[in-house]
Length: 224
Length: 236
Image (tube, each protein chain N blue to C red):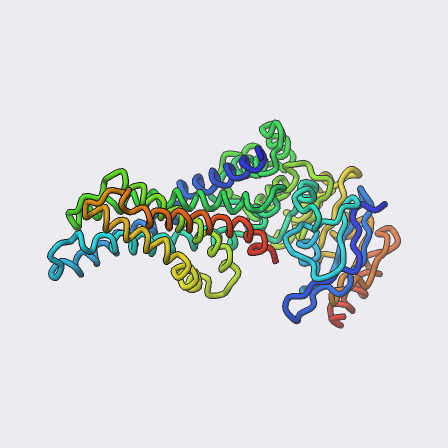
């Protein structure tokens, strides 16, 4: 178990270190998110009486689409530089490789969210900084990272991988996004988190279910 | 008993059969060089041995253990130098080896990394990013990476690809040093002279089958060249 955790930590450290140097993933995600928010801000400026009506959708759509950019790079960069084989040669169960990559993706998306949330406050003048809302965003992000990482690995050997990833990812991730949006609506309308228990349970169940499936299938996904 | 035993190994990608019943036994401590034209199945054979690819049929045993039964355990015994260096451009030479040492759970990694970097002549440049290295330096670092956990089996897939003659000569000297009697080496290459210089035993793989197998001392370059050309041209 110790070896398994060491491999997860090593891969996570490596991905974060490489990203801190190259800034390939974060720059793309952050710029995309900022542009999306700017366009959505102008799109809703004239017609929406209360911007709180659109903020949940704006938040989750921006995060989901920005995430796809980063998730796609997770395995494409490994594949293109040929280093994926190096990870798969590690003498541990390959789910450790999945876990390391997934945790790195999770950090990248969370960092982008730290950038997106204040921008939404700025553009839409709606307060999003509350503990229950941050919890909901974190749980939704876990779902995105869990599913996105396995689909990134699945599509990396295909020719139209950049196109295929969102096409495969979004239908699967729909329960996570819907739960996130419904809870964000409720929290912005002043409901306590306890009143949104059903959606919270759904989100947790899908996070756990997807994680279990990804653990079990990763070896088959990456081996020729 | 041979260290590596391959029996009836087959691999197909869809309807395309890459390996068609390979039988091979490799003794511990031997250096075996596999020649063959592009598409002969050399890389596929090495990838199956490295547990990166699943065989369609047949069996591969390392030290008597079927690799599909314990792939994690087998990987500890293997070092692979592939076409690509498996290194990260945005990490330094030291950081790359440190990362792989952590993947393999190497004890006292600092001492091992220093020893390897000195051996491949990159110790003075250990703090520089790999993106600043020449192809020859990258390939030397790739060999150090493959040896970081001191594996008893070293798999080399055309390690001299893309190297200028001087760098290739340096690579040959380095491979001779890291081979030795304690390590079993299986290498693929197109370069017959270089391969012969490193091998105890030479094979030609063509059309997914081993079509030639001889002790390196029993065959000369002038014997091997026409044979190789025939298989490359004939696409056997």
